[in-house]
Length: 491
Image (tube, rainbow, N blue to C red):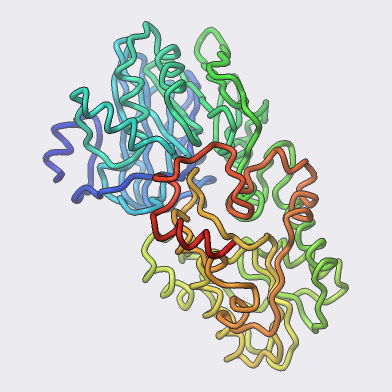
């Protein structure tokens, strides 16, 4: 699809770039929405997206409802690159939803940028999605069989089409119809011409919260987006809920019966911003406790504890405190480089390490180091990081990881789609230690991980560690034949 095709199909979008369609679709992102008559909702949404930028750095978009119509401006890049004063000023209305995105398996093209605009018989709507549908392909194929035409490669378009096709009289009823068919993780911010709708899947895999500010209602992937606006946290959107906010106030529908809670535990380990709260627990304090318990579980004789910037810093501080070893900086981070975990191209991940981090030679030379990181996923960045410390003169490197080995893929919205991508699925801990070049390697066990957060394990999805998927995944979706054979041998 080229730019002309995009404009023909989606005339209310402002397209600055487009490219060919990709063959796959999966999203994991940040969503924001506000209902605020009389407020500059587009500008407030921009600030909300700025606070959520860590959740996706490839594209950004804002859709605004002005009482009669819904318009959208979006583009590739950071929110600060996509929006300027002119674009923000052109989006006038009382309702807005926004989105920041990274593509997990490709598809970083303009036609996949969100929010997505569509229509139901009850009116226009714009949908922004965080998560991943595990039955997306089956839903798409069935709708294609019925004559539906798809223009994007994201499961968000599938959600929009399910709502569009519903015979229900109201949009909320249409969303409820769609939820009956959707399987997987989805936190949605949906905007219409005159109201804001927040939706969460029945397991609550991805976070979504509600807040209030000067009579406005706000929904966001994380509470940090409320804080930046000075909004007061009200509550989390509960699993299976549809929450509508308009001139009549708040209306709640329990569209799908809530299932066993399964918030992604990786939100606490790495993904969420440290000042956010999930399940009422502060992310920063949880990471601090992970480091403390890691020090008790896997001590090491060392002169200095350092963390891999930036997400592992609280983990390292906790380790140093519990181990009574000085904490210090071992790396200087170039803060203008994107987080390498969410760069979808492997070549960019590897090159990004050298652009991103520089060792502090005077701080680490001749020292026995404990190096704390939040996770090892593919193992492609950890080895170069250890090599940088060796080149800077580190005497010993004891690597400590604040989560268990990641051995199984995520199908609910994180960028690990097959076991073959995961180093812990292919190598033992001693083999990983040799691969990354550390003198020792220890991981936090799952019991101490959930203990650090302070809630029972049943509240979380820990499938990437233990293969206990809370939402059943069909074998043809879960892994390729290669991965099935590998998993039988590797257990």
